[in-house]
Amino acid sequence: MERKRDGYSWLSLIPLYGEHTAGFFFCETAISLTLEMEMKHALPGFLAGFFVLALPVAAQEPALFRGADLKLGEKLIAEHKCVACHQQKVGGDGSAIYKPAGRINTPGFLRGMVEQCNTEMNLGLFPEDVTAVAAVLNRDHYRFK
Image (cartoon, rainbow, N blue to C red):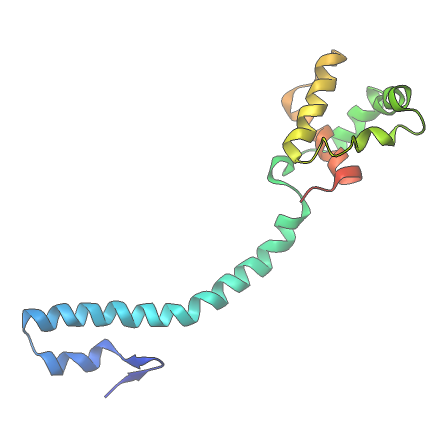
């Protein structure tokens, strides 16, 4: 008789029940249960491997900023003199503006603040430009996952 890890394989059940309808149903159920038992052992290993491989990519940046052009973001920050404006608003080196008492606590809020600067200052940035600037700010200051 053929055995599996957690019980009998479906092949061993066929001779016991012959060609009866109930036996056929039982064989289908046994197949289903055997596959379920096999997956019970295989699935955790597969998922663990998948998440171990995917984790470094997912942990690097939020989905909102994936594919953003960081070089373009850096160029736009320099071109539009964002640091000088922030220095005028908050003093010092201007970096205090990046931690406004927990107001900016998600990647979406960060992108929204960059969009607000775009509108307030009439910078004329396209949506992908705003995302690029926000991605640079996330990389350098916020580090949202």
